[in-house]
Image (cartoon, rainbow over all chains, first blue to last red; front, side, top):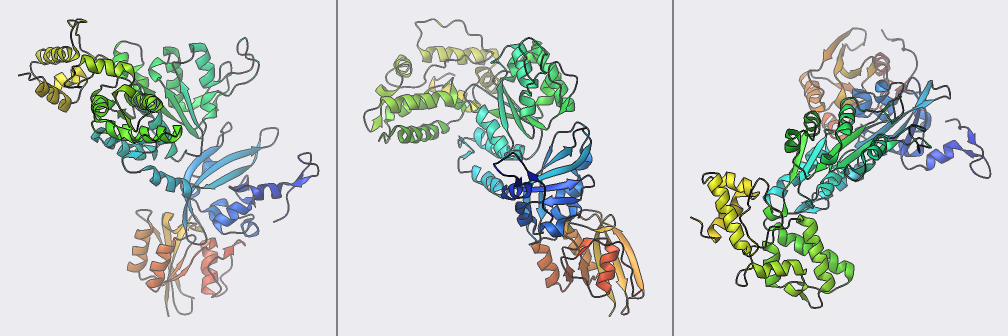
Amino acid sequence: MSSLHEIPGLLDKPVALEKILDEIPSGIVILDKNLRIRYMNRAISALTGYSPDEARTISCHNILRSRVCIKSCPAAQMTENTEPICKQSDLINRDRQKIPVRITLAPLREESGSLIGYMETVEDIRSIQQRGTEMQRAFGYSKMIGKSQGMDKVFRMLPLIAQNESSVLVTGETGTGKDLAAEAIHESSGRAKGPFIKINCGALPETLLESELFGHQKGAFTGAVENKPGRFRLAHNGTLYLTEIGDLPLSLQVKLLTFLDDKIVYPLGSTRGHEVNVRIIAGTHRDLEDMVRQGNFRKDLLFRLNVVRVHLPPLRERGDDIRLLMDHFLNIFTTEFGKKIKGFENDAVMLLKNYSYPGNVRELRNITEYAVNVCQAELIGLSDLPAYLVETGEQAGSQTLEPAPARSRAPGLQHSSSSISETWPETEKKMIIDALVRTGGRRSKAAAILGWARSTLWRKIKQYNIE
Amino acid sequence: MPKKILIPLYGREVAPRFDLAAEAVIVQVDETSRDRREKLVVLPQVSAEKLCHMILTEAIDTLVCGGIEEEYYQYLTWKRITVYDDVIGQWENALNRLLRGELQSGDIITASPEVNTDA
């Protein structure tokens, strides 16, 4: 293949572009306007089995032989303002191997803006796909672990969700692992090599959030001294995770809705839109349906985000997962802090297993971290646990350590009769009776009011001898 | 001996991928290659398995195709079908080259349509 132009000014002496491109580990193909190959680097030559000389002037679909070239050529989808298009596909090389690849097609334009060709980047993603299967380890997925029925359902759903492009809504109480779930979806999707951009919708004031999300044009407002691309454009060909979507102001909800419809971002102060390819994952601990009823969240936005919904159960409903997580975090922190702690004493286990964890997994992690820090012995005892746990445990009665106080009131339960002098078991018993009275004895409904699983309610009814 | 040849198509070209071909041409030629009958088949489904099945049911002797997975290549050669794979170019040119006995796997036929000198 004839040598390409040399680039002056980059190093002390001019260096051939061909030499630089050959050292890039991803496959690079330069195509003319008619999608005929003008140049390909060493990596793509190794991947396809065709030498650059053989491939020159041949149509790209005959050399790359990727599914996407044949079924929906990305170049045909390019419009004037299109940003690079990225697709996951597979190709069959000369060794008759089918190889999964990620193809990015970027238009090449001359200064006047007219199209003169394309640059195609081809990445071999066999190692990523292999990692995807490694992510499905025993009792967990990615960085999440658990073996309860609720979590097992989630772990089975995540890899399936990752394989498509639909918007995802991750719900669950604080500390249940919404961020980890979003990251796991991104990591095992075809966008894994693309960016994963996270933004907290509740962390910034409305005006700042708009510019942060959608970007702004230089001079759009006082202080906008230069163009800013915004998170949507930064997440191009990747995933944008909008955490605390329930805190997104109504005006921005409209803008997000428009984006979800046409996938075009209009930066503040700009009339020119940018087409971006972003997968949206939204997370919230709020009840969005309730917010819709109250008029604080747009119904149409909820419908668009709620294409695929993942609900992460609270830790108190995850049964044996508490013990599994305790040991998991103990391993992490003993290694990190270089301590020789072997486990937990029985009374500490009892207390931790029966605590209600309003802060969920995050709270359990913090409790374990605290205990590992404080513990001087080989086993973590009650004295090594945070004081608030032990104090409430004593309140609960010295014979039985369960149940510890639920620090968050179950949603929908109006319970005002408890006085400060009442012990937790008394208060809990009253709450159960109250809920059963309100539902006419229907246990499933009572459990829903209390925010528990039916089995938890059944166990507690038995424990308190409620007839 | 008369020959029955199948070429998966992508427009007028030999399909770059055997497993993604949506149509194929079946060519029947006599011993002298002078009498040639062509039949265009639109496949109901894009599938390597279905195409393999059709090759067997139609009693094809020779397959000319682009990229093909090892699994299907081995299966077809085991079924005594001669496979010329990695062929790039217009299908008529590939066929003419085959009938002249000059086609090889991996051939890139870029010239303008070749004239069938035997015809």
